[in-house]
Every structure is written in C-alpha cells, then in structure tokens.
Length: 142
Image (cartoon, rainbow, N blue to C red; front, side, top):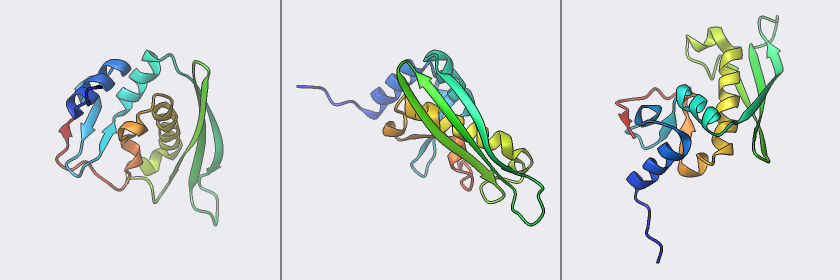
C-alpha cells in the first residue's frame, strides 16, 4: 500500500526537486501558496528550461487607448513545450508596477510557463504576480 504524502513531505519534495529553499515559497494565511521571482529563476536553472519571450501587444502612451502590454513566453524542458501569456495594465498592477508594465507582463508570462513545465500548479503553487490585488498579509514560510 502506497504511503500518503503529508503536506510537509510534499513541500520537502518540491524544494528538493526544484532546487528551492523555504524562503522561495510563501504560504499566505488565506490559504494560497506563491513562489517568488528568485524561485522561478532557480527552477529555470535546475531544470535547464529554455525560454523565449515575445512582445505581442504594447499600447503604452497611445492617445485614446488604455496602456496595455501582453508578452508570450515559450518554454522548453526536454521534449515538453509550453506557451502562455502575461499581461499588465493599470488594473492589474500596483502603483509601482504601473511604471514597469512591460517587465511585469514578461515576469508573469515566464512564471506561468515555468510553473506549468514543472507541474507546480497541480501542487497548488502560483507565482506571486498572479495576485496583483492581493497583498501578502501575515505571510508565513511554507
């Protein structure tokens, strides 16, 4: 009979498989886990993920249009290829992030591809930038 994996066992496995440390993943008291940018970069290095980024939409400073950026990321791990998009606009960015919309869209697209390639979405882990309206409140280390 297969032993059930505890939450602690699962997190230890995730850290080990992806070259992470506890500071890379946070458990918010509201029940969700998110991974920081440094963790995403560690996963890319650990799994030798190849990444290509393409700017798809960039409406910054155009008259009569809302600023909006969309970046498509394509990632490859072995034979597995994943594509996803990241977007940024005034509604999805904090006041600081509004000044770096292209970078935010790139960061979001990259994180989504990486999390899909290493199956962390199935483990309930998202990137920190998927919660633009959610500030970490009393986050604790996972």
